[in-house]
Length: 126
Image (cartoon, rainbow, N blue to C red; front, top):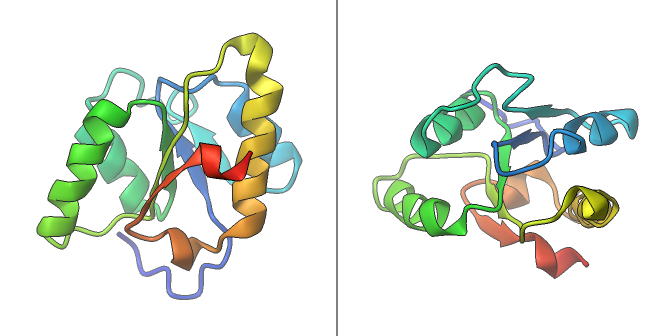
């Protein structure tokens, strides 16, 4: 992971489990965000997504708790750093407003340093 000592604001990277509508909505509100479609990483395995995000100092947002929770534990045990993992429930496209709202609340509540190497559940910010 790049040296992000001075990074204050959380930057978001979303995997294929998250609607592609989220990243542009966050950017319109002044946040740095990128979807896996925009990054041309669609179809990568989960570990590759986390590596991609970690190398760029971006927190990974996903609804794939079954894979990312055990991965976070492995990374912690091996002292492999990441910029954070945010687990969200699955939302339909009609519920994208709720996903945006909860994500904005998280972004307004935490710093990048507080999220580093930690897993948060987006429901905490409803």
